[in-house]
Length: 239
Ligand SMILES: Nc1ncnc2c1ncn2[C@@H]1O[C@H](COP(=O)(O)OP(=O)(O)O)[C@@H](O)[C@H]1O
Ligand SMILES: [Mg+2]
Image (cartoon, rainbow, N blue to C red; front, top):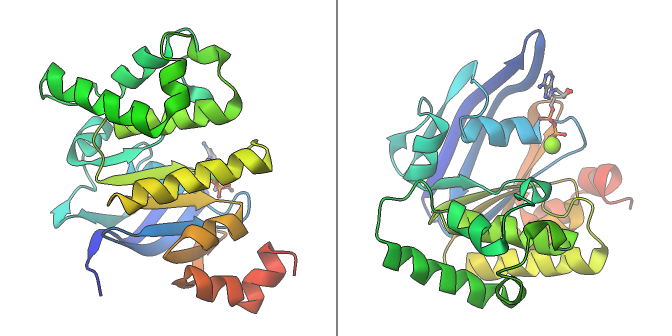
């Protein structure tokens, strides 16, 4: 069994009186795609934001590669290699595609040559971004903006990529393309935490998954096991 690269123990998050996440534990194994699925309001985004340091934790520990990152500021967390993909629509629409990608490297302290090298790699992965490199990000389609958001996160040299519903609002064929891209990125060794309401697609590409309901983990298992689970089928797959 592969060791956990990132683990969360007893995470609790509150918004005033609302307890959004009620003491959950997760483990992301190195090199795997882990899916965190559940209905609207289950606490998925809150969990990701807590990992990124964007909301305060009422309780819980976050260990990344043996280091306690639970108390770090968001930019320091990014620098450790835990990088959240911005929502597709958070691309900076008045900047060019290239400028958006370059911004992804802002926390890095290495050379311009290394960043240029990584930009080339992102363009190789997303040829359509290369074609539109000098165009404004605001002119991209929804799917292309999602790819730009992923490309921008890759520019930060992540070791763990966190994604919050990358399929949201996209046509099914575009969703397929995004998920295929995630599989490719994972095949190159990147560890991924994928938050989705598109439970079927997420569990199909995930090595492991967790089902979150009203702030609690209610089921966990391999992607296959969860797809076969009657409770998952009834609640999320319309079987
Ligand atoms: N900024 C906020 N202030 C108050 N309550 C919030 C806030 N953000 C989320 N919540 C509540 O926390 C719970 C979990 O929300 P969220 O993490 O966004 O769920 P999900 O991403 O699974 O849809 C919901 O009950 C939601 O209404
Ligand atoms: Mg959400």
